[in-house]
Image (tube, rainbow, N blue to C red; front, top):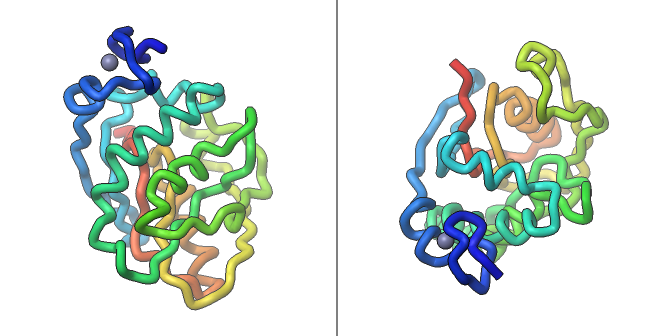
Length: 189
Ligand SMILES: [Zn+2]
């Protein structure tokens, strides 16, 4: 196949060269209003084209590549710890869930708890105005045993409301959120 970015020949949707140059991750840290720390690896604008593939067949492969390339090495310090990954609302659209794919990419270091954190509100966020998104609550339902240490996982952080809401329900269920991970930060100033 051809590389999604440079159109050169590649066995994967993104070639090694593009991964190591255009997609060299730049980890950044953001602290949300409730104190939750979020680590991201790209600016939204840097990978928006790739994020838009998320509901396509090729998108699953791209998300897995990005997870292994950018997130996995960052989590190495957790490899011998009992920490679990909680993908946010990993319900399946178009055949796969993008946050579950991200979790799969790091599963060697942090064990995924698939389908544990589901939104009851099926509001479609992408393409909606910020003011409208802010008003929406996901109304998460958490099905997970208590007393676990977890990291939250999502593709993008924008306002941080979704992650804070997720942490809130974890707290109420006695699940300790250590920090959150997103591929991209789309902070809107
Ligand atoms: Zn390439």
